[in-house]
Image (tube, rainbow, N blue to C red; front, side, top):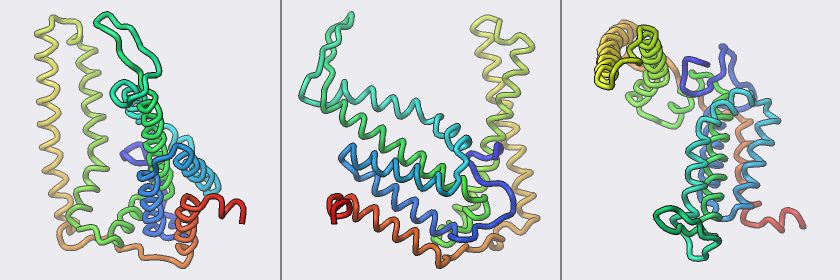
Length: 257
């Protein structure tokens, strides 16, 4: 959905084979496993397994890739930064105007490991959420006993932060059409102050409207969305999670019984 920060599935259809809580728990389990790996082949194996399972589940890869690409700068930042700040074995020396900067082998390996970790977890959770509606996601969190107050704040954040961002962009474009970006530096700073102030003022007005609307709908007297519970098919997800742990601990036993 273009109005949400996360790629929730549209429509009123529900998951048939697996519960949203089971899918979310399995995704969190795989994410924890990926986060503790210290070997590049192991994390690469998990990434391939995630992509394979997501492809079998008919994931909307266009949506997933477009959102995952937004984290590319953060991933590449760590991959390129670590070789310069961590390690003992100097792979090469890079001359710069203010001196020579060493490039470490251990930092390169660690940067690649962190990059694969982040890429795996980003693809994993975006692909997981792309198979749920917003109601199913909230139902899964209710099954996991997440407090209602946190769920209410989460719903507001997912729905209205994109609206605030879009509103700020429209106001900035309107100022640009009126020529505010071609004035002096002081005039540009002043127009930016007006932009920030107007955005905050509209955000407060919108928050009052949202609060009154949610109060009229009974907010604070119990969530309308119920916990999703679990289904029998979730056993397959938990068995797959167990298989991943067993394979990473005993790879040769699985391949060569």
